[in-house]
Each structure stands twice: as C-alpha cells, then as structure tokens.
Length: 67
Image 1 (cartoon, rainbow, N blue to C red):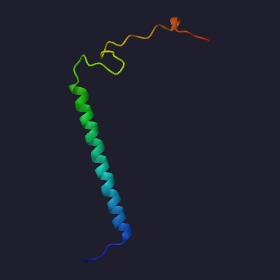
Image 2 (cartoon, rainbow, N blue to C red):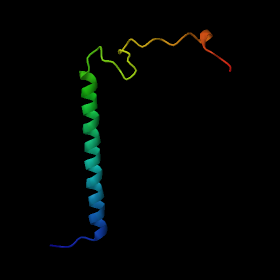
Image 3 (cartoon, one colour):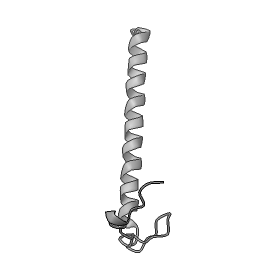
Image 4 (cartoon, one colour):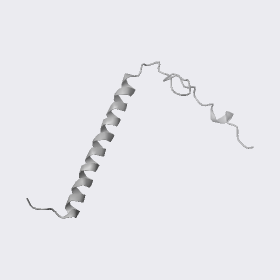
C-alpha cells in the first residue's frame, strides 16, 4: 500500500473533524428546535413571564429621560 504524504493525511483528518463538528451542531440545533416546539403554551421563561404575556413597554412619553 502506498504511503500518503503527511499533509494529505492532516488535510483529510481536518476535513473529517469539520464534518463531525458540523453534524453535531446540526443535531443540537434540531433537538433545540424540537424542544422549543414541544414546550407547552403556558411555559414560563426565566423571568417568570408566560409566553405571550410579557407586558408592553410604556409609551415613549413616559420614558424616564435625563439623570
């Protein structure tokens, strides 16, 4: 069997590593998407608000401006 130069072997190993990382990132993204879709409609976020129940910000004329 013919021996390949080290640069060819390193390039192939780097390509395989990039493919494995890309597949892992795609899998994590897809599982996150499925988890987000499976969350119940009343799911609370980290601030304690329910989805869709976040209060609207005050109108601009009530914003505290200045020091």
